[in-house]
Amino acid sequence: MKIFNFVGARPNFVKVLPILQAIAAYNSEAGKSTDKITEVLVHTGQHYDYLMSKVFFGQLGLKPPDYNLEVGSGPQGWQTAEILARAEKVLLEEKPDIAITYGDTNSTLAGALAAAKLLIPVAHIEAGLRSYNRKMPEEINRILTDRLSTYLFCPTSRAVKNLAREGMTTGVHLVGDVMYDALLRNIKIAETRSQILVELGLKPKGYLLTTIHRAENTDNPENLESILAAFSQLEQPLVLPLHPRTRKRITQLDLMGLLENDSNLKVIDPVSYLDMLVLEKNAEKILTDSGGIQKEAYWLKVPCITLRRETEWPETVETGWNKLVGADTEAILCFADEQFFEENQQIDLYGDGNASERILEILLGENR
Image 1 (cartoon, rainbow, N blue to C red):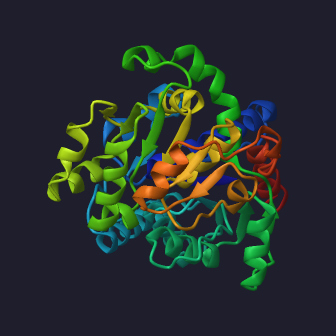
Image 2 (cartoon, helix red, strand yellow):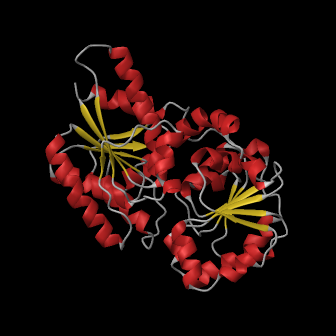
């Protein structure tokens, strides 16, 4: 069996790692038999900056991609169409049995569309997630990718229910979260290798950590200014690994002064996955608009303040570990200073850390 893995943005690299490890383990057990899996890794080039892309291939042991489509940045429509056109050529050449797509990026949708048009079965990892905010590009990508997919691998029971409400019950599998697999396998490695706390002069639980990258905040001047205004008023030390697109927008809107005049704020370049895990685990609280970081905060038992009005991961809110505040300056300041969680409220919601093996078992079982 030949499996294509489409990746292109930073979250995709984290999610594909345990799948590649599961394939490698299976092939090792298969030995010289003809049942081995041929795995092809396709990097669309949606993220191409070193710290947003290439570092994953070195630091996490990801093999170099078999194909790099080198699309780069651009308007969403152009980027999606360009990935689609270039992916189609590779699919026609390689003729895989299955194409796996991850998450909710432009690479996710374009890879799924290219494969589905060629009648290649699509497997969507993180199927069934919904924020119910159609203004989010990611929400459109999720919905369309689910509709194109033969295999819908859901990380939570709520995701299964979301699909059922939309009439999708065939090919739906509750498998757990591959990001949880990745975190469990990499947190000890991160704590051994990373020197980020020393490099930044940080003490465990002595700082807040924040990230901003979603279009609803970066492309909305009022939202972005309100969030940065809150950051400038926080009394706790705040670490901000600044996404390249967010930095560009802050500069365009002449808001950099809100960051530069705050002695408590450390603005740094994006960090590697292992460094980010260490920063997350040791933060007092995390403020973010990232879906993946909301989950990682939950797993690491770090309170999260989400800079959005909705989330694909409502379980983290219902258990008390996550607060949705949007871009409201006062709400951000309030929850940054308040203890709003209880240790005993955390429960296992995202599987047992073996989602990747479960996914591979299902694909093999149905394609022999």
